[in-house]
Length: 187
Image (cartoon, rainbow, N blue to C red; front, side, top):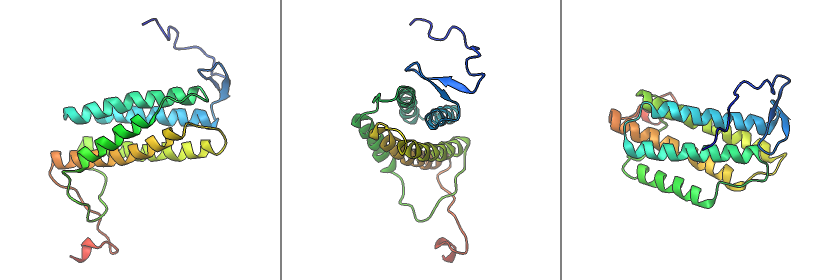
């Protein structure tokens, strides 16, 4: 592979714009650039979660997602490009089904936390939800690949399921939300 980035400090963004893959420049406050940053943040958070996960199946799923997120970044850098396809949705849904099947049914909301792996997976889920909100806002002003927003929506579900799966592997239980409004507080 040729050197893609030989000079990291370019100073081209000093005036508040950033270069897109199509050669255009956009304000760093542009909605598309904002989405790019959030997808990058999600990918980095998944990388942090991975550093605490030893389960090879979960690792493989998350590595695959990281590649998909780079493809989403490529879509966002090149308006009109569509890299995320229905097959990517199928993979997310298949993983969600596989990891959810052995889990007990939810009786109440669970508190995000637990081991470091579980806590970071919950954090990635919340970042994913923010990415989804930003994509919806961008879609209101620019055209986007519709499968990409579906992928991000399914991904947040999968991240929740993976957090639950890791919680059951790590400590065997989850902490349920209890409040005066909680059904479980009456038991």
